[in-house]
Length: 350
Image 1 (cartoon, helix red, strand yellow):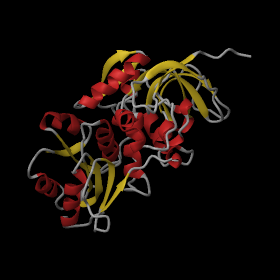
Image 2 (cartoon, helix red, strand yellow; image 1 turned 120 degrees about the horizontal axis):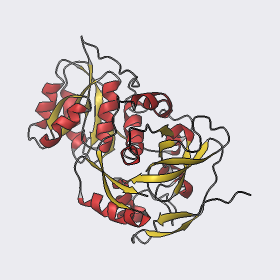
Image 3 (cartoon, rainbow, N blue to C red; image 1 turned 180 degrees about the horizontal axis):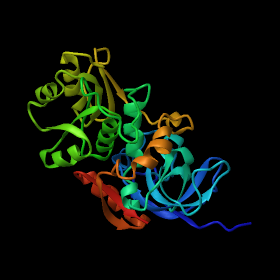
């Protein structure tokens, strides 16, 4: 019998204490699964939120657990039925712990089980650190934009779908400098929509480089009027919300739009006061077990679009900021993110 590698993980316990690095089981891949030796791990706000809030968020998670959502590394084993990948391939993948509650699928370990349909080849031109900025952002942005229960937009294409020059469909995407927002801007723009986004002025050029036609200062006291003017005369296909209070002004824009409009806001995160029975629907983007299953609406993005788009058309953003190397640095990375960053992806190398 082949000896398997020794695995280690940074474990999250119920006590809300710091992550504890220690041994973890090595899990062999099942059908349609791969084992990835992680080279870089991305950190997300949900990581420190779960640690600080405990049972107050994601109460279905069993402790001790191996948290984390974003991985990039090298394939070391493949399960039955895997045809797109081979041992030695450079990849990035979604770590499915949150919806699956299955610790072998957590990111904060040396070896993670990944699902073939939520794994993507990583070109040599893109580093592991850049690649691990993408997985969760792609899940949230892709589901909110293209899921039939959300905005249900047309999928992006390679080359990018041309915009309707006569009456382009427009979408408002908040927070275009963030990982999720910037990914959503690229996906929607390359699907043929005119993107209006928001950010701080220092990030306007970045967000425009990702495909936004216009960017509005999200600190502006006239942001609602600014966005109304930006989408005037266009078909408004909906909005994508990130940040406290964002859905409130987006709802005002949708409600007052003169012209064809889809009164729907896909909400990635952030508190709001939009009435549940009002004219505008605000729906939280829920990462359920079905979302990471084989019939996920995100499968075409990982299997068909991204492998071609990453050859220069789609650019991993935001820029990674490596805060350390080793599992024992993940806690520090979570603390750094908790203090706040702008247009950066906090990353740990392994």
